[in-house]
Length: 99
Image (cartoon, rainbow, N blue to C red):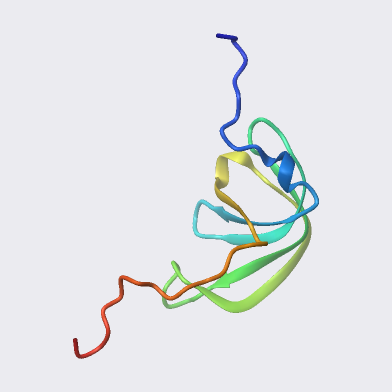
């Protein structure tokens, strides 16, 4: 076994593609992945942040804020997912009213 640490996530296949990044504290950003390092620091171009709901900080709204070129610190990155090939679905665990 080598002493070199391997990253669990191979981000090379997402370079120059759209990714969605969730950060600690509830912030959510979408942009084009331009670079990364072994500490999971990410460089995103044309980044857009989804504004959180003031009543429920765990939910995002349809309002966005353009950020441009940003660096996401690896210590704050919780989730990285591609934007292509993913669709939002209704929550299957929510009970219908009157049931």
